[in-house]
Length: 242
Image 1 (spheres, rainbow, N blue to C red):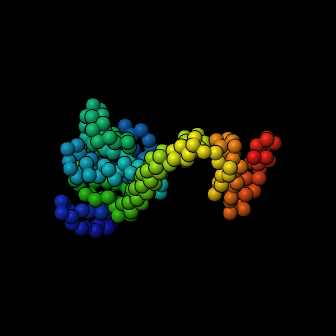
Image 2: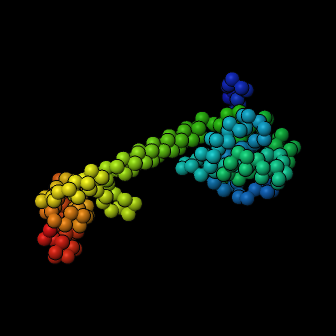
């Protein structure tokens, strides 16, 4: 006996059904590129031109291949060319296949709808709304993407800043700030202090850029100091004396 819970949204009624040991029949989807009886799957019944279906697609893209989430198989009643156009228009990355309209009507009460499969067992059905437990996983993936985007933006801003103030180029080579490079052309430096020298690579680079100066390295982290000693030991004698 199926257990049904109903809720409503602004757009349509939403029904989630827990199904007792109903199994997926591979004959329902002969063109499936993968075996839906292996592993977790979310079979999404979509309809081109349906606003609710289009709203689902953004979440399904994140769900498909997401850690701890089922893979997604999209299903529509259309020919190969229509499916290709639909996938291209919506930029869909999960597989989309056709199913006979009569079978869709049997499995989906409305659009969009979905079946949650676990090793071929239909563990839940949904209409109008993706199950909450799956949406929680999708939200975590989205939050992670937002953090990555913010970190990338900060990195880009830092690189732009370093373009004016020096830093490292794409090969990890130290680039002097513009104002320091200008001073070097006007007056000789007797000493240079590399504060936070890490493993010492930047220190030796400064020594090359300012050959007439003595370069001092300061590094408070002992692990980095040990690494610096190894870098120092690997340098030619004339560089170590600088």
